[in-house]
Image (cartoon, rainbow, N blue to C red; front, side, top):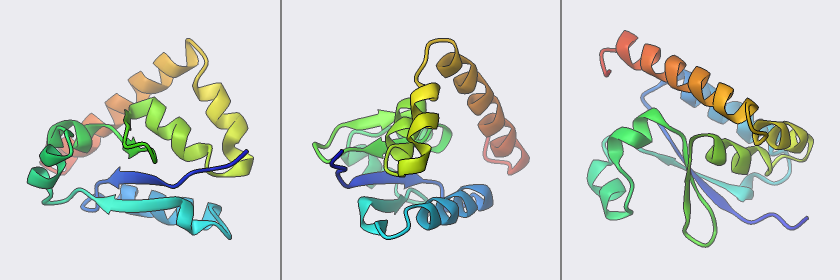
Amino acid sequence: MKKEKITVFYDGACPTCVRDRVWYETWLGRHPELVVWYDITGEDEALKAMGIDPDKALRELHVQDQQGVVHREMDAYILLLNQIWWLRPVAFLMGLPGIRQGLSAIYRRMVDQRLNREGRG
């Protein structure tokens, strides 16, 4: 399976997001070039120019594939996890009906709670 470079838009003002980025970078092992990390902090105008709503970028993971298509939330996580060979089964499970919706609801609730705690909600 040939993997293509993706761009992950993440919240660099979020300690959890930064920690998660470090984990993903570690898990990429010998292939860190497969993921470009884009910190969205203070980049509202640049995001808008790319067709990304800054508020949604703050609340949902966004990943751009090599063709320029931006994937959001669970689709974005699936794309990211597929870059790491041993997480591909997790990506597959995340995409299953029922599981996808359940994970989405949990994810949204966790993000909303984090942003409210940080006074950014």
